[in-house]
Image 1 (cartoon, rainbow over the protein chains, first blue to last red):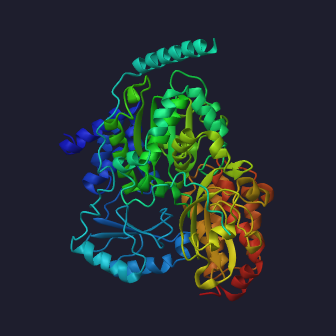
Image 2 (image 1 turned 30 degrees about the horizontal axis):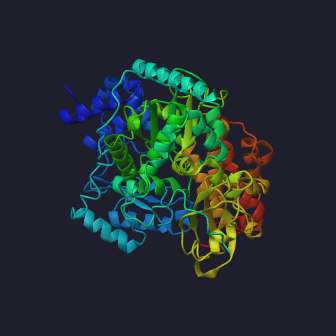
Image 3 (image 1 turned 180 degrees about the horizontal axis):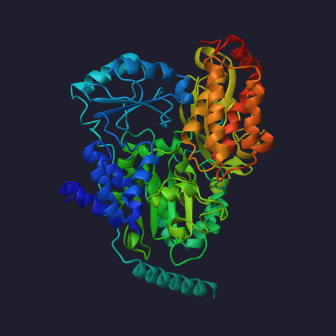
Length: 206
Length: 434
């Protein structure tokens, strides 16, 4: 029994095929698992291990290293407020505190209705619109308490679903092209091209 | 007065709302550099980049041409683009991947051709959800356009590009750590030597790792020639550069300006650039190149924005991000927050970094929040000295990668410049500004 839904399983297999070695599909596949389940579940870990040729312990150990992967359930919307230096100078700490009151959960916690998880993030690389707030890794550009409250109201009402897909944080655009050629064939082709260039260079030198 | 006559090389399409689309890209000279490159010998393309004196734009400032020349000859080699922009207050690659993804993709194809690599990866921060979509869309469009894939534009060169998402780890900006992440592992930096992935990189094969902005310069360099690029700037700092300006300025943002010909004061005060400090307050300190860089004070405002010019003054231009602090900024708080960042992001492999960053963060915390002691100031310096012995610049290293020796930068700077503030925190039992 596959843990991934059929369409997700197909995308996972496509990911494996992209890389010279299948373990390289680890991070994108963990993102994919979060898209399906909201967090990285035990079932997904088993299946990713099978698909990447690793063990569940290796998958869990890898996932645990990265901040974006949640090994426990989180809210439908993960709200991240940056307090790193550029945002600190713009009042990031106050905005984080305000967010905690508005959402009714501590930093790192999830609201009782399971809708929101609040995180204090490190720099999100959007420092000209500080303090930076992301929801499910989408920049929402709400720098004031009032704007943040409006954002929360809109999210609760489902008005931002197009801009902020629930856990659909990544890979909404799928790869549709690609090279499907054996590496040996490419190497041979490259060698032939080099020989042709060398011949051309020799002619030009004469 | 700021010198703003230089051409916009990587931000030329910023006025267009649809700057990220293939249609706009083609209408503004897109993929012409690649077409030209494909008529040249690969070595000649590399020679143009070498002639351009393009210094890597990721932070270390290593000459891109020289990096390429170190690629070990091998049947299989890779090109990996570092778009894991996570150095605090750096947001220029974010700008490039969202606003001009085709320029990046074209740069990658040109580089791959010059290096004769048939597989490239673009590693982007996982937090760049929109950037990942835009770059993947650009890659898809490039395939449809014939600029990517099998026999590009009818030539004998083929290339595949895979867009790879990171997952939230500052350390993956370190190139060997990024390679580990791309191999599906924890992002632990690799032990050196070998110092360069060009010898042993992805899957043990020779690999060139270049920054997003570095790649984005290539279409212009090939179109206009390396000499035209080298004619901009001065000394080793050729060309223009994207500077990310943030903190207490009126107009924070990403600005592309000519290197060396402009100073920090120009960038911060010119009405077309930073527009001055908020409420016309005085600059108390500024960070010249990302939080790994030692801080500067008002006396360095007239220093040119050049790699060697900044290096000679004991800091670095690094990732090109400048954070301005004014007289409302508590330097202890700023340095504490930066230390907390390093403590969170230390990968944990090396003891001086893993333990040192945590100890430093806790001491800085108690100074800022109450419970600090006057002798903490020297204790901090002593701890810093254990991570980067001698506290010199560039720092000595006791760790596998440069994250460790970056930790002392802000603490040492803040103590050197503002020791009285630290003592006031100790005497006051917390931050006197609160």
